[in-house]
Image 1 (cartoon, rainbow, N blue to C red):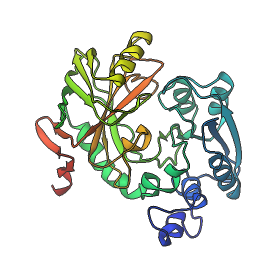
Image 2 (cartoon, one colour; image 1 turned 135 degrees about the vertical axis):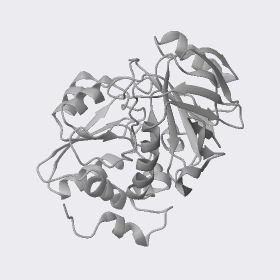
Image 3 (cartoon, rainbow, N blue to C red; image 1 turned 30 degrees about the vertical axis):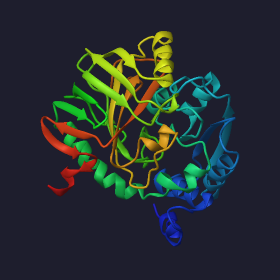
Image 4 (cartoon, helix red, strand yellow; image 1 turned 45 degrees about the horizontal axis):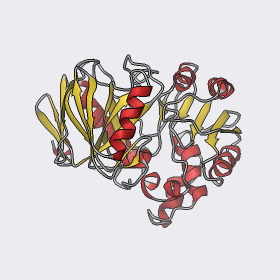
Length: 340
């Protein structure tokens, strides 16, 4: 479908650090989500979402002839917590969904139900205005998608993955038979295609019970925010057996004690976005080129794993080395497979 001059071309005159919100919102609705006249577009925000975001997104959806609805919810207690039942129903009734709440709605039963009902779209997007007009959201998701497809193909042919880092991560897990996800990089044109913003990762859930070793979360993690002292997680048989560190480690232990199956090793992901900034928000940080992330808790809900949990917790790893069946694909944060 042609919309005339693309919003990617429209934004070319602006620097990566100063793209106006209407331009980014137009790019999302027209190019990445391919919103069509008459489609039902649901935009979900919460009371922490910047007040400029929903009107800009709804306005761009209406400009192409779609029928946008904005719903504001109370912030969920944790990333992966379910939205209210009426919002879940609205997701299933929509053609396109975009969630820009302060906690992720991606790893939820509501997302899975909407996906099965044929909705397409993004179930975790930044809630801060700055994260839409600067950094990772200003990248070309189509260009990142081409690299993501290469990496996803390597994932599909791999039996065992190993992730190490200078900070002490050394995790081994089996992944054979698991389909990589997130490689859509936010480009969802067909029914049932779902992703997250900003675009820029490939990930999958390892086989349950196979992960072993050590994970060291650095700088930022879901629901913990900025990490002052690295959080060291010991893993045995696919589960967390010990957590060490400072105040953030104490908070993680509390979550693991309170939430059933939160100790599951749920995801291994590799960041691809060259404009992503690493800060106190995991939503953008984990997409940064040269990083990896390993998540705990929920791996089900159409993500490909078997463990359903009410939370999903990502933690960032800097300068990772990633081996697929012993062959390096990322070395100290450099994506070496691209040269092959």
